[in-house]
Image (cartoon, rainbow, N blue to C red; front, side, top):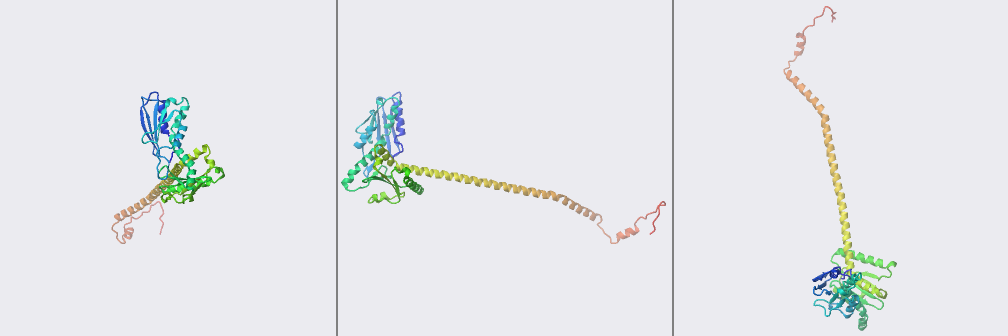
Length: 369
């Protein structure tokens, strides 16, 4: 629906550029904003004092009948906001609801010029708020003629209608909620339940009571079925006379116009927050798993190195034994080669007949056997 800021930042920047220009500037610029809002800024070097601003904006309509042009009440509200430097051109340029002629020479110098240009840049918000104010002001007379409090369907965006019901002591605004994603429905439902709990506390006792229900409230009985088919339920605000007194009326109307935008922003921010937390959690888990994997690789390397060292140690310890065993085998083979032919009894014959006799020395005694 409407934007959060009343002032169009892009339009404000263009008007300040024209006002501060030392030389006349030739400009013919089209500016588009969210919600099918279009601005057309024209400035001629031949007539630098007179600049034209045309505004095209979707208007609040009752039911399916679209609204064209501005009512006298909306025109009066625009005149109250703008200064003497702004004049409404009638009729407006083709394709636009409002055309303003701005005379920069009449804008006071000093610090006040910034305030005046800011007010001019907020004309679209003034038009939108004035329409809802006018509808709320005229509801009582409509209900009296019809004899009942019939809901008024207000359409600013085709997919975001809402209802206003004027009752004897209060005004009830009902918002049917629709979401494309199932996750958005869950987030919005939790948000509405929290909003109800907070609104029922003593701290927010002066705020309009808020209720949420998955089914249409009784005030919408008899409305078309396609308007009541939602997946996000219905949010209702009860606005009493204290909420529309003096300056509170403008704040209340602006909050109602921006309720859809507030809900969408909350759902989007919450979804982004959850996704960031999940991504951060996933990264931490991946980091832990990666660390465990590195530790397992280090353990495997350490075990493999230890086993290699143990095997090498066994090899080093077994070398002397193997060497001795091989030496014994070699000696045995040499002996086998040297005495390859064996004669049974030859050793005894050798000792008896082939032994050199021992001669006794005359200087020694011989032991008799």
